Length: 322
Image (cartoon, rainbow, N blue to C red):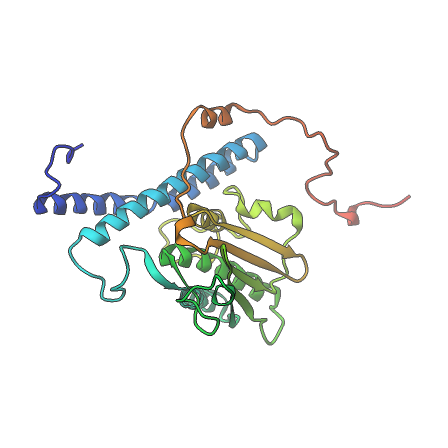
């Protein structure tokens, strides 16, 4: 409210407003790990409850998506109105790259994840990238996208980097841990495909996969496959809090995309990021706070109308046939 009656044309006021936005953004940098730590402590204190888990998932999805949107707006304003041009990215419009080279972002994310993997495991799998450009052929091809040229799109590189970095961390960890006794590690393969509507990025690993019943758990804020890291210990954990995949999916959904996992237990996992090929289709997806949202928290979980087996497979070694 401090700037409500200020003159937006005054450069001094504009500078003060920009500085205030930077302060607000920096003040909330640790919101995600702090909330994640709170979820872990809640789970340790109260255990697993299906209704509570559903409400927590619903609330955090909307909370984090709102946060992504707010930080997007703040970053756009501060980058555009700070009076300078980023020498590393002179053609960026704020945080948006009108000609984002997808494969370059893939390699950047891989390189950073590789550094972490080498640090923790002293080994890391190699990367193989392939591009398929359907937009570069046919009557509806783009003049700026040809089959023999790198695929470009209008997107926020930092969002794409975040998603890819999380997927690379998961793929590398699974690959290294499932091939501890092997002299070589299977390559992580990335396919970038540009179609008429979607730009899809598929990351394939041979990390042993996960059972079908656990796929949805991987997107839950209440679930993690690794020991939890401690706050304030420094460094970037390779895994732990369990918020990497769910928040990465929110980044994809923010501009009408999605992130899905397809796994074959015993072999490996395919992670696919779906993005809109046309920037005109990349419209913000934001939560609406109305009575429907309020009623969501009042709902109780009804009994299933299908025969449901036990959630965990039985240990057959403890059963004897008589």
